[in-house]
Amino acid sequence: MTPTEHYILPDIPDYHRLDVYEANGGYTALRKALGMKPEEVTDEVKKSNLRGRGGACFPTGLKWTFMPKGSDKPKYLAVNGDESEPGTFKDRQIFEYNPHQLLEGILIGCYAMGINAAYVYIRGEYGKWIRMMQTAVDAAYENGYVGNNILGSGFSTEIILHKGAGAYICGEESSLMNSIQGERGYPRVKPPFPAQRGLWGCPTTINNVETMTNVPLIINKGWEWYSKIGNTKHPGPILVGISGHVNKPGVFEVPTGVPLLELIHAYAGGIPGNKKIKAVIPGGSSTMILRAEQLEGVCMDVDSLKAAGSSVGTAGLIVMDEDTDLIPILSRIAKFYHHESCGQCTPCREGTGWLEKVLERFEHNQAKTEDIDLLLNIANNIEGNTICALGDAAAWPVQSMIRQFREEFEKHITPQLAD
Image (cartoon, rainbow, N blue to C red; front, side, top):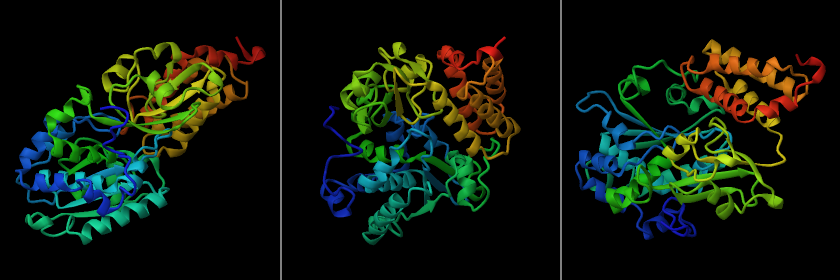
């Protein structure tokens, strides 16, 4: 895959229109899948080693095998397009420029797992993109791709768009399901897992928007072709959203395994004023920060970033130049997680507020030396002690920032308050 080969965001005018999508091979993967056995479709996705693009990088085909067979209960697919992680803005590109490939992937997944209803959950602030997706869904219904007896195959399924109400917590899979059911967006205790007890107590699979958009590629071109794109342990095209101190911020489609420094300089145009890089957050605000000197040889794939002490997350790369004061950035991140905590778990409900208050001391140069260790203590007591990962998402930036940039905190200590 070269920089000009785009499979998720192809450079084709009006590709969001059904007729243009069909003219460029659209829905051929669905036709092919309908001629296969459902388990053959799942096996193809499993062999491709497609990993989820929502942050956890869990193998998609393996997740599909968790859907129970022979159940009398209805089965559901929930497609997560909440995309509320700060620094993440890739899924809305699919809603706008390639909605039918997403729908085709959803239909293939529904066929493979025997699902008769799929919900696409889109964050409420995405009004424009919700309307664009609804237009695509309507066109798919009108042309026989969704609904009863799809393409004369005997298989039927529905696709319903569900608009969120602006709550970050609803990006967590069980909270998302509660939201679809019209309930408070509280995460659920697991087990049971969604495949056993999901929407309305029925078996449910949850996948990210970008993940499902990859599925037609695998069915059309085969798992062997797909598995050779990028990093073999984390293959395929990936959408990387680059923001912060770069000359050309945006969403870039690349093979997995592209070096972070290449993404910053060759794709995003480098740093304004030719300044040096101070730090990057590689996968959205919840992922561990990396110093500039750690970036050499680090690539945008799950193993490389894990070895560097961070994670690929949602591939939302945030770049900060040499003049950046990191304390206001961390303070703003902490404020976000405090505001978005659902309040169900005490460590998160109380701890995120404490993190915000202590960081405000640093931001206003009113901190003591012991406040650094206090921040760590609070973060350590949040991490791993909550029902969902929002608590971890609040704790990790604080822990990694102190570990990597302790000197930044020391600059904000007021001498007369210091020990």
